[in-house]
Image 1: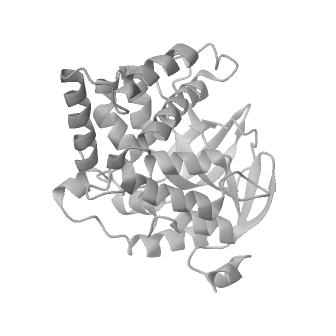
Image 2: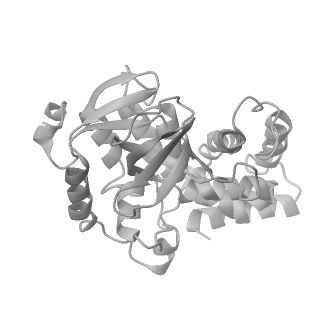
Length: 307
């Protein structure tokens, strides 16, 4: 458990023992209210029009969004507000033409990637720690955990089959059969920068369908070789956090920890936001076009912003 979530949990339990109504204990009521309105990740009448895998993530994202608004006002979460607030002001996450940062991209970063405090926690790790005390069901916690473990990645397009897109991640070579709720299916050979979420329930009929949760960013140029070279040279610059507690919060103990750290956290908090801003070329309603590499300023259309 992280330092901040431990403080939240202690305050929550103290209020429960003393039967006090506090902003933190009021979150329990909010959880029940939201569950009553939108249902659970496995069953939501409000999301009935969506594919069940996409609906599960939308339901969980909605719950996290409501809780984030309340949690961010608490004194224990001041460090979180100090990270996310300035980034929101700087990058105006609303989507083109106002900003290349879409709401789906920014909120998943703010909830699950933006680290804060001495334990490098995220809002997602805090909710996983205190969620049972708030009344979050196992279905909610399971889906929130998948979202917390997720990250952006660079994928090569391997073709379209019906309404599904086949993607393979550079470096890891992990392959996914994906739904793309934004609607853009693309074509083989393209490179995408996107957050791919795994099927949320392995016992469901659609257990093979991953979800491209963000609007795809199409990496127009350069190509696969240059992006692979970039990832390899930049992974060498990634530093693991010091200390057992800090390492425990990063979820980077997989087969490719340097890549996972780079794609989830960047070399700094706003690393990938800045890239999207500098690399923006054009957009359609279902895809955003980017050009260039983060560490090659002359390749970026808006590199003058750096001066």
